[in-house]
View 1 (cartoon, rainbow, N blue to C red):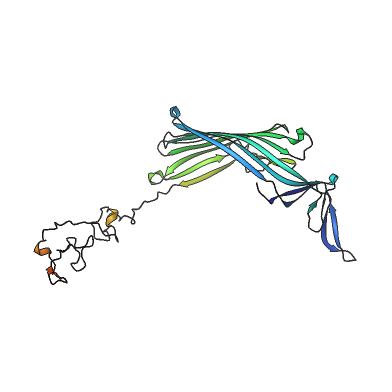
View 2 (spheres, helix red, strand yellow):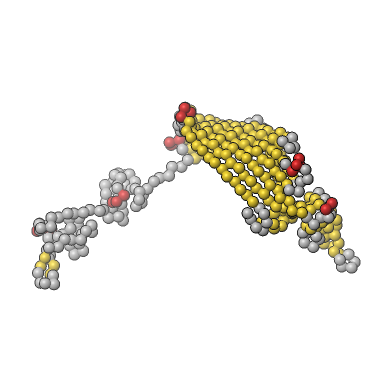
Length: 345
């Protein structure tokens, strides 16, 4: 529920006075009177509702090596509007254009829809999708007098088949066919058309990551772009102008993204690594530039290291001298091993 919903305010068959920008001899503005069939503006009203719920279920189809998904739902919408008519003393105020003398009308629409999609999972060379979507709609207006005028029932559905096949290793065939039908039960109308798009392509470049396609859109030249709109006290059917049949040449590229290790990119083949490793060999992420290798040197505690690995000796607070092990990994005796502190005895 929404308070202060911005909705439309409609006035039918009313007189509207529009200033012309001129003044008469007494200095009053000169206006002209128009009689439009519909005059609309905006207003704020309470009582907007939009409720919907959907259920989905999917299951595999083993013998087709495909997946089936079905969805069913209900959608309810009600929108308040302000409607004024000349017969009911409705008018338009001259100074600000606000409609006065209007009545509240709640335009509601209940929609029941169902969708089914069958998608293939066969291989990268065979791909198809079959789908169907239908919706049954009931539109009502609270200001309608009779039940025949109050119920506007219509049904629209679309069936689509999309496919793509790869043959002879590098040639492709892509097709998309859809059938759309709009049926009006209250107004008794039927509009339908078929939209068909076909393309023939050739994969190019290394690893076939590019594709050049030549095809035709709207092969049957039937697209009418039909749409139906229901509002406060009216129903509008519209057919839009579209391009129609046309031919295209398309190019599609699929770049390959190079993956790097956790600490940065890998060194290229044939070039020496930054830390002096042998060229042409891929290194592990833990020995890249800026990351010290993790090396742990375990020396027996009661055993003193050989003389070649002893340090100069440290003078302790009690006056005794102890030997410090020199790190085997190459660290300085003064700073200790980089992987673990030097063990003292």
